[in-house]
Length: 211
Image 1: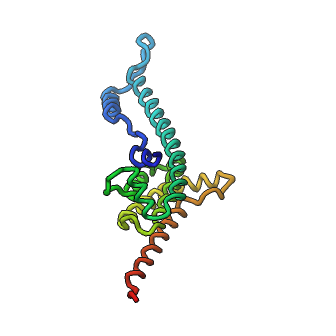
Image 2: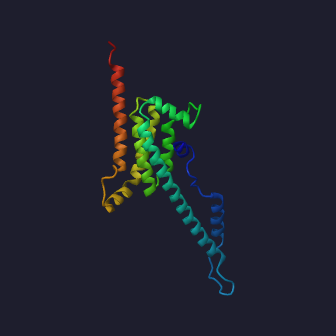
Image 3: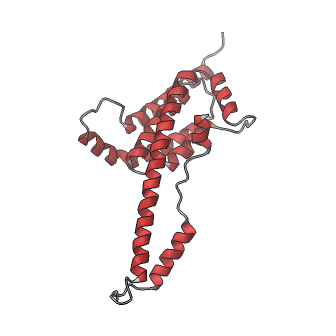
């Protein structure tokens, strides 16, 4: 199942921090010197260039991973919006993702996704928009989730939106088509409004006396 892979097995994006730290430490101990034509290029300078190239490779790999991640997430979101129409369907989906795990929580897993992909990049922005659609669909259900977890999720989503506001503005300004999807901050606002509406409805049910 694609959604299971996306939620539980995110792309590996962390660098080998130990090796990188060792290289940076060694580089700090040995100052760069003028190269001797007879001895060849200075080893420290070559090492610094290697570090730069390694960082570029890490960034490129991360972008490729996130681009694929966004494509798979878009497919999953479309299926989620179409097939998960009530709490029973949501429970059945959760059981398919983690059979027998009653502690599994969509809001918690979606929050992890938000926090992993909050960088101000085009791929992360796309992931956040798709995730927002899934969150809105989740909130519109009858209540198959813990409200505090959804509130915490929306808080993380709002922070990501603030972080990407400038990026999206520049992307919208440079694009000739502004009608394809809603802006990220509008999707966050829609999710927040949906949750507030659910709260009000629940409060009315609590305070209305039974006939």
